[in-house]
Length: 127
Image 1: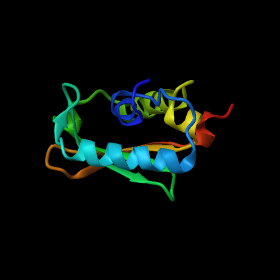
Image 2 (image 1 turned 180 degrees about the vertical axis):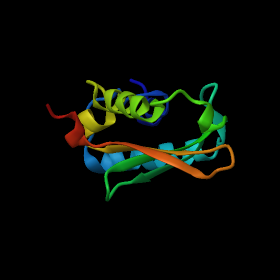
Image 3 (image 1 turned 30 degrees about the vertical axis):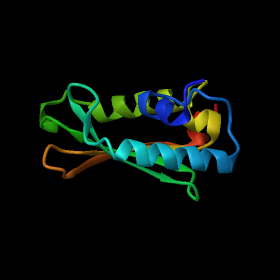
């Protein structure tokens, strides 16, 4: 079985539902291990700069930096990205659908200024 912290970095949660305390412990280990290796480029346009988890809030936040000027992106990119975010975290192995946690991506610009937030909550997976 893929360790939870590795699954969280590469995509949707791909482990069985884990007890809350165990999930918190795994998330804390993932957060610590990952942050020690950041920043890291994750695709042509994006760099992961921080991971933050909240056991009380049952959320996992990825802080990412866009490596290009957001004005150069195609019109409507934010709504498309939110749909992709929801699909990823609400699929059969998703963090929101499988473990009941909220997945958050905070996107910053090349100069680290805030651009937008993508958020998928367990309630987004219903229906």
